[in-house]
Image 1 (cartoon, helix red, strand yellow):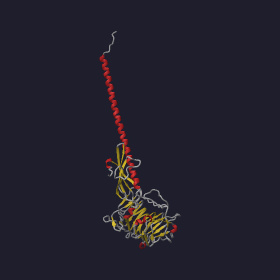
Image 2: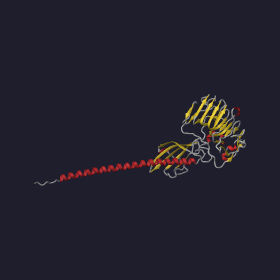
Image 3: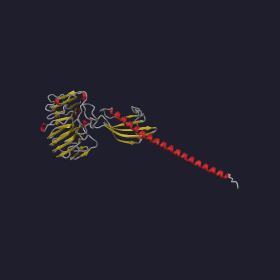
Length: 412
């Protein structure tokens, strides 16, 4: 039987095949490793990019905190970051964040914030603003009614039965003299006594220039202790320190000195507290020169407040007189020739105000449950632009968006 002999050529061929297989496997392994490494790097960069977004948001939060410390002061541009132009070098707890808060106006900022994690930047931009406490010349929670020929607002010159004036009493175009409600705005006789007749969800109007407003505006009765629960608008609250009601025999004094006062049913006569025939706001720095009058029953009864035949703070600063009234009482304007005038904030979200012949003169801002004007030729309601100095103390974010990180530049 012949002996089988393996040639060296066969051995060399097998070895070549084995080497090629090993090389192919090696190259495949290198490719897998390279791809895996690249994938891990990409994943890590993605994680860092997402993490940088959280750091950028921390910058916006820090800006909000610093804005809340402003109180009633106007917005001013500031920045946080490693730059000589910034008074603070870093965000506490977020060293990778830097931002610029640019004042747009007294109550609005544009905040551009950038976060950095392992060299990966991510930036955002947000509008931060605080709202006007009294944005409307009249706000009626349930119903706002104009009966009779009030006349119409003229958008070309800003004049009309409801208009905006400045501190001198001159008519101005801004801010707009708008009215609003959570219920119905009704016009009988004239189509458009205000520039706009706004209503919130669930409300409506038959007036011209009616607009559905986004969000909510739901004033609540003042409360007897601070702080009040968060609300829009902020609910007035009686501070721990206040003075007794200055009314004598149901009538307030002719000069009201700055301060915070509480009036209850004990100060009323026949359930009514009345202003003096001529009421002025006295000088003084107490309570920033402001008279705040809280009209709040302690036994559940309703109290009325009368301005009939009275001139209350006539030609004065409307921000210096603020009445906060709780309960379903009435604001007694006076009818016809007995109507009075009032310059200030009248905040009575559960009370009703009805004027026959509509001869009462209002200058400032009115917040009531219902406002009714019966007989319109004489109506005169003025929104004094000084009211917009009364703003909410807290700031809120809107229009948040991501932006290129190069858009965040710290001032030098």
